[in-house]
Amino acid sequence: MVYDLVIHNGTVITLNEAFEVLPKGMVCVKDGYIKTIEADAPGQPLPPSMDTLDADGGIIMPGLINTHTHLPMTLFRGLADDLPLHTWLNDHIFPAEQKHIHPDNVRYGTLLGCAEMITAGITTCCDGYFHEDHVASAFSTTGMRGVLGQGIIDFPAPGVPDPSQNIEAAVSYAKTWKNASSLIKPSFFCHSPYTCAEKTLVAAKHRASDLGLLFQIHAAETKTEWHQFEKEHGQTPIGFLEHLGVLDENTLLVHCVWVSDGDIDTIKKHGTKISHNPESNMKLGSGISPVAKFIDAGIPVGLGTDGSASNNNLDIFQEMDTAAKLQKALSKDPTVMNAASVLKMGTIGGARAIGWDHAIGSLETGKRADIVIVDMNTPHLIPVYNPVSHLVYAARGSDVRDVIVNGRFILRAHQCLTIDVETVMEKVKQISKQVRSTNGLNHRK
Ligand SMILES: [Zn+2]
Figure 1: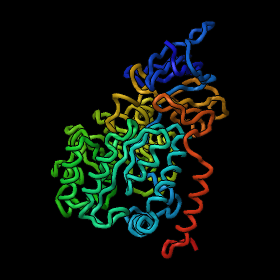
Figure 2 (figure 1 turned 60 degrees about the horizontal axis):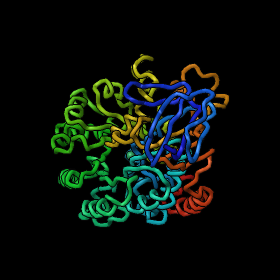
Figure 3 (figure 1 turned 180 degrees about the vertical axis):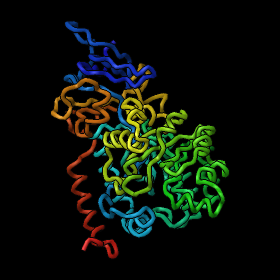
Figure 4 (figure 1 turned 90 degrees about the horizontal axis):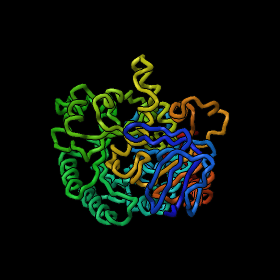
């Protein structure tokens, strides 16, 4: 067989069930799939292939998966910081979205977010926002893989001025994108149990199930939300969602900071998945999600950055480092979550969380070729005693040299091949001038 691509001379971290690591290995790709993974044969010629990539002693690993983004929010990066979630949302983000989120801006915000993720080794993301049809059209030009959710909220939103139409708008979007691209899966993203009415949540989940879509929702994020549901319903936010029947294996709960031990049992019982966003939770002062308990319970957990207005970057390497250290600090036990379990959250755990683990999340024969090469020839990654430790505790997004999705290079030698990054950055700088000059938002006197 003549392969399309042979990647060699690197440490292959497979993330397969046995967590196999090949100190010097080779990955062969054909028609977008991984065909073989084997040890390099010193002195032997490489198998015949159309293209080869010398990893130069670096790490060959599965693409990182960002399980929670709001891509166009790159436009609001650093617009309002150091505020509690509800003030941040109601006084800054929602008004900014009403004024500035329209199709053209959504396109450039999405492309900027994709450029940032690609250059940091993220091959797949799970997004939720408004005008998601425009997110999807921009996203589809980048070569990335994504679960892209149309936002549903019970007040006028960008693209859906009449909230009574919010579910129909999501259905129409999902039908358009359902079979449009093998790299994109449409989804529904209900903003939260406190911004969507019971009937909206129930109807949205029902329609998502009919269409076979992932249902995403921010849940149990803050103490305020916890107290609100306790007062109004006598339930926890997770208990409330269970009561409505929206918890099953096609639901992704984002955050889960404020959860009881009973809630963890509930999530486990329904096969529901979790997106853990430690930096967003820290920055908004929401608290610390008991993610080690989720993992111990066997709940699929992926990592997410959240939107770049609440992080403020889209770097899963940083998120892995933070996730590990935060659990250690919380439990005062350095053994509570090791590097391997955190790397799993960033890869195969993320794939499970978004329901795509049959195809991505690990380097295994028969899976899609979503592969990242990390350059290890840099001072902060030398020496290497344990490459898994380095990926979690020492590497940065900028150490990623090459990114392949579905067998196709989208980053090669640090150059993004699918996005005109200079033009996109310039365009977003122009958009930021409009955002800055908007009355009521110019809080930086
Ligand atoms: Zn979010």
